[in-house]
Length: 235
Picture 1 (cartoon, rainbow, N blue to C red):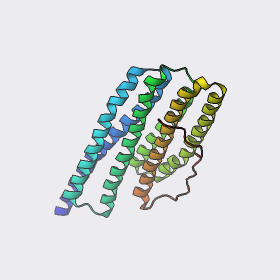
Picture 2 (picture 1 turned 45 degrees about the vertical axis):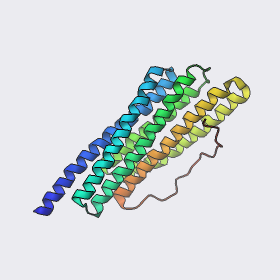
Picture 3 (picture 1 turned 120 degrees about the vertical axis):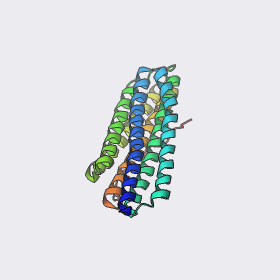
Picture 4 (picture 1 turned 120 degrees about the horizontal axis):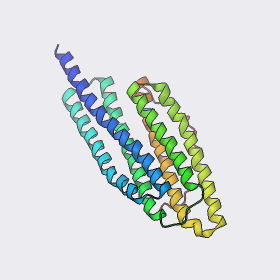
């Protein structure tokens, strides 16, 4: 009876932590979408809101860590339950990094608003952001549903993001070579595109954690990486 009571308390605590995690995930999804939209529309006001909201995302990650540590200390979870708690901690860390990258995108909006528009670049950023946002949604759904197959699909889709990044990198180089006046704006756009590509990597890490949670082992390290472009300065 005592064991059942402890298990019930653990389940309640875990549900509370997972609720924080899902709130965090929803905020990150919104930040990604709004960062791309504010860039395309040169909406400096929305960009500033995204930057301020990042502090709330950071605070939620701290809350996840604090509550997870408390659960581990008080409930002494079994091996499988401990794996769940550790997975939540790792997922929240990846979400926090995605939030940081969305904030970085927003930071560039006010700068780019005063520079000439790079033809096609905002639309490319929107497509990349949309794909990463959808990957994140599916990764979180996979966690909620304990769906390793859906998580595996998310992992494979990171290749699409890498290919979009590489294509955009080449487009930006072309614009810079055609007109040196485009260089500053293209450098900022490259920084943003690289941030989105890195978001894709963090979302992939979330999906990998889901596979580990469900199967007990990490997925094979066979994920192709097509980002072979050199770095431009991220100033």
